[in-house]
Length: 358
Image (tube, rainbow, N blue to C red):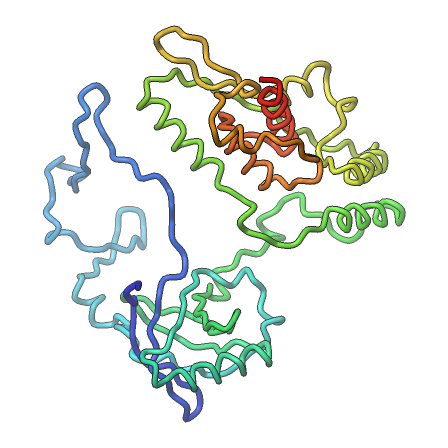
């Protein structure tokens, strides 16, 4: 079981329940160390006086707020400590708001809330069910790790979640940030709007977060594996996306609609430059061994027992990208994490044909 990052009391009105706060998300980013090229020695940072170049100890570092060029108001660590909000012992809900009124842009980080003891299960479940039925969230100020947060406590799937939120003055005005933001109707026709809505309806899917992968992190891990095994690294990129021609917007929408009917969401081959579509769909090859041996292509993977077991004919056009990705993993298709859905389908189909023929 995970250790809570905070324990205290959740209160609203005269009702209180002891709770514990747990981290709800985790980062799987690959961690690198900084090394000097050629030696492999670690590189570390030092605090250095910019004027003299001398190293400065941590005890001699203070904070400075610049009020004019080169002029600072110096603030000592103990002065900040005196006005620090400290650590809250209570999440005191001051009011409840309708979740439909809260723009998702306000939500920042998510934590789980759990009862601090089985004896508090009843009141915990009561609050959870009441929030679920009312579709409301409790708003509270909460301090932890020397910082004060605006938070929202809401129910989801039988659990209580605490979301830290952005303050109102932290949100940027999109009309000031985006130079080409259109105002009013941008001149599209009713037919174009109806076609776009129909395309959205046809491409609507059930939300399944497991279908999506951090392909960049997968490529980093594959890069490390290849370098560790002494394989030559070869980059493979698809064609860059091109903006839709505004003049041909209706034609593009219709072609997209036709493609969606047949399970294709990428541009038709006729819309691309000669050779580009075929090059993009060609299965990638595995990295070459530094010893000079030719690498096996994804169309002809090793005849592993796992791949043999799954060498059955399937209607690949009906599979989602996540399902095709699983098939590609069974066939040990290299660079599968960088492929589009159509490229995965083509690579899996070729791998299956090869195994059936062998």
